Image (cartoon, rainbow, N blue to C red):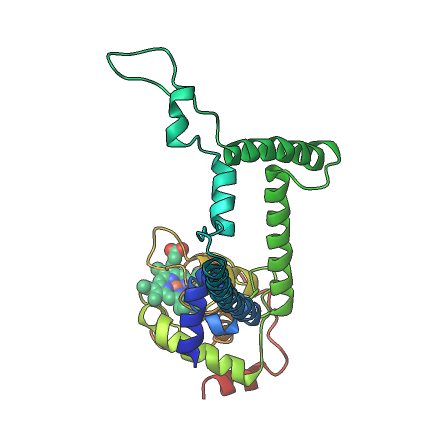
Length: 307
Ligand code: HEC
């Protein structure tokens, strides 16, 4: 069914707008697109209209053929020569072109003769003149709407409107999913066991290779002591984890670990304070106590996190 709908959308050309946008976002699929029903409905209406038009044209041809036959029979009965009426399309074609018949070309031949090449003084075809008049009319409408009454926005204004709209949407998204929007100003020191267990998992998977499983430090600094290179608050720790430290082995983890997991791992590593692992790396940086005061139940938190 899904394949059918996407084929349907491709055929009708309505897929492009919705598709192109969502295809770039790895997480959002076409099927989550809130506009999907709209595109499908429009595509459906488009096809129905096309079919109705096809049937109408076919019916018209059948009726035409029947009337022509009737006229032919009538002419035969009256003994006159049957001369078919030109079709509507033929009439329209002649009207919009207004060709000078070949027999009458001599009348519009110009006097010049360029080495045997003669020129006809044909007038502009009516369809061209209609189009020209339409553009003049259109320019007046355009001028009034865009420059006199300012009813419609000019392209500069349109761009600004779109940017404002996008910013509004981004803010809305941020507000509706606080977890995805965590940054170094809004990060919290989380203490619930599940979050810390998740933080520990992340630490073992991604950080232990340099900071050691117990946080005692190896390539990276000791994270259990009270000496810090970049600050000891949850906000500063989160910032280092997210942005990394340029020129060192500490890479930016943004994009590899979700903001929520970065919050969890930052919280987890702060619970390692004062755990005094064996053979720690010697202190680096300045003596700072974490600004994040560990909660009263910190010991139980530590126990839970180390489970
Ligand atoms: C490839 C090695 C490596 C890995 C993996 C690594 N780090 Fe680091 N980390 C470092 C180094 C090196 C530094 C010191 C940077 C400097 O000199 O400023 C550091 C610094 C830090 C600091 C700042 C310490 C301070 O004293 O201010 C924190 C916090 C930190 N890392 C957390 C993590 C977390 C969390 C992870 C896992 C998501 C991680 N690191 C993974 C090498 C690593």
